[in-house]
Length: 550
Ligand code: ATP
Ligand code: MG
Ligand code: MG
Image 1 (cartoon, rainbow, N blue to C red):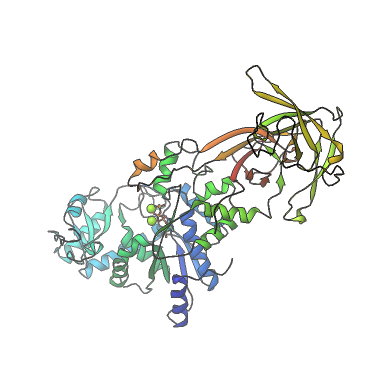
Image 2 (cartoon, rainbow, N blue to C red; image 1 turned 135 degrees about the horizontal axis):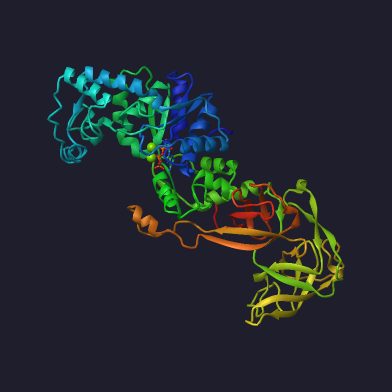
């Protein structure tokens, strides 16, 4: 992995190492296992792992699994797979739920210090008495319970003597604090639910703001990097570390989360797409999940380079989806072999080519990377071309096939359109052409110049294939999205187009996840889910051209 690009977080770390505050650094990537990882998580993964790599530190993978209602081992497994696939190996695998006992003991310590109390207000009442930015909150009538009473009640909460929502443990900080997060935040709630890791051992669960700083401190994390929404939580983060008397004092640093056009970036919303059957699972190639991008044909290299290039900032912004596309084109340009595929076939019969004859022509595998060598492709009397490479009545400047016109067939000959065959409904179903034997690619002695070059595949060898073309899943509009409803209303009904066509015969049996550049169509990936031994299915990763400039 490369050196992390310079940014304000890297500068903080450089200072901490220079000043001797830390000898080495420990970062962490702390997903909640409540969904599959998305490209936003990739930004955080690349940032945390690259920083530790650069400074010889460590990065933990920690599952922040403190909410039994939403978490699942399926998600744990997918997250591990995705982090590894991105090219990173964690220096320790941790589960926040393994610290439940220690967290409980730290809460007891807070009670003993008079810094926490058991409160009987309902969640609604707590919310209602919290105050506003302009008005202080109201102190809970249970705020001044004795230490003994609090210890007893908290223990009985743990034992399961109370129902969900009946009691909470709250920090005793300041109901008049200008920071709402400091107004006696809830530290523990009662939840009689089975946890994916601890089963039914616990019926009280720590809240994020209490659990997260403790997790970091227990693991000796030096720099706890999170997204900007947590900036206002930092005083509470520091309060928990201090009042719980943690030895290690991690520093929370916030950066701007990744937002992208034409997609949604939240596990909750992505789960809605999956649960409502709008997409074909978490790994649908239209999803911004790591699993979806992988199935689409994105490479770890492209995703890492994208994450490094977008940078790390202190203010939120939205990245154009085309920037991600730029990086996969860059990565595949020299790696992916170029072949010919016909997505919407139109049969062409070359009437002056001998019947039954097949000749094998030389085709380079990647003109930008001669090391990839050449291959032989068959040519005969019958070929397929793209339907839109022919027009019966061509508009001005149309240089492909039309009656009487000549084009070059890539790697082969110049052909001329002599006759158009139609079905009863008037649709063009076949073209009759002639070829000029003196125009063979590389050995052309005709001196002819034609303006158009089109691709083709030989009809008898051609391998039937399915092509899946994608458009953005979510349509952009100028209205700020406020709630679920509006993003579900912006779903693009035409985000998937499935076509039946042909590829070169040599692609038979091609392995899932192999990537190609199909001449003039773009980069494609062999779909691992729908491909069969007989018929490959190709996902278009990205088209060839874009107006996007880096
Ligand atoms: P989501 O709303 O998608 O569930 P989250 O922040 O709740 O996101 P976590 O599983 O808690 O998801 O995230 C793990 C880590 O990934 C956190 O450190 C979080 O800051 C980071 N992260 C999540 N989304 C983004 C994003 N869009 N850009 C950058 N980092 C992100
Ligand atoms: Mg979340
Ligand atoms: Mg989270």
